[in-house]
Length: 440
Image (cartoon, rainbow, N blue to C red; front, side, top):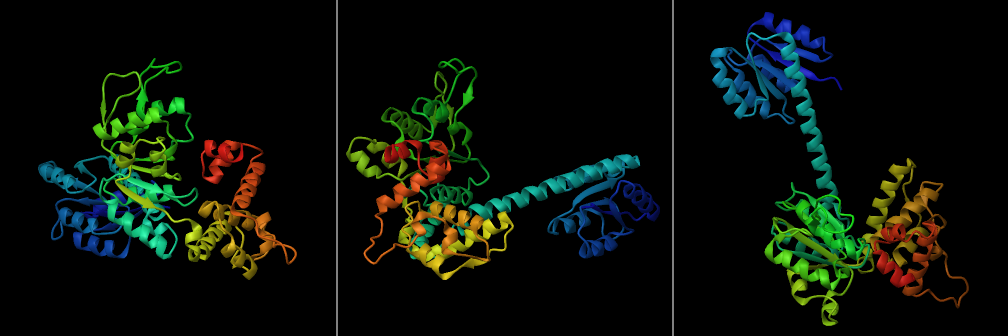
């Protein structure tokens, strides 16, 4: 898109000269011979840059700067000033002007200042759009559902988002624990800081301490350089410890000390690194039961679960299935560039009756596969293309058990990934260790 520039000066000859030169750089350049005319131009058009004289009759450059800052999005303002007004120009910079040029200046100096101002505005606009996209994706409104069970979760996490209290998200695999963790972060005072997600079950036990806390060069075999840990990386923001119930007892004691002291000592190091972060953790295990079994430290449990939040399974909020299914279908249709509109009655009935052992993640995968196979504008039962979708034959046929459904689903994912358990575990939303425990 061609950048639009507004040149403002009481000296019409100066305006014409700058217009001609800047137009030669490929920009669309308008001119105004007074501050009042410039205000009217700002009302009519959106400009990327306003290049204006500082001292003008009536509406001067400072008044024009203030008016420009009221626009949305605001143009960058570059001031032109004589040496005697230099102090005023510097003060204007403090109040939001992008740059200033001291008269006399070369025309190419003006072009360079304008180019930098254009780049700055576009960079800021891109950052603003990205921030809005992040907020839309990770805001509470991005978590789809209107069921009472989900509304209770919303109320709870909204209440704690602004605090720094540790939150423990409890729920089955695929219930959206990381999405809720990101929503907590992006609705907190730490939203501009980093969000660092760690799947504790996906990192080998021997490496997890180094990954979390960092290490010094030579701390162990293969430590050929110093490394900051993920806790240090998350300082100023939020660290999300997923599958926290899977960490070894030996590491639990070290993690407890980090949380108590708000400081971390890298492996092989002697100096502690101070931390300023919030901890959100998640588990699909019954940590209270693991505490009773001696598999999880009670003091660490209470340190992590200052605010425990239980996420309902999809079985507990069936009224949200049509909303989620419609959302996933719309997204898949856009990605595949297919005119998919809805589901036929048989397909929707099956979606509502299925037990969804893999929760929202399983629903998403089923819809994506159905969208790929669908030939018409409506997804049919046949498009779901899963053994779960085949109606039971014969009057005496029985429905499969939940354990059988889960085993069949895991088997199918393993077949699709050609036995790659790491990829299969990621699709299923469980750890490799959990996959091996359930399926060998």
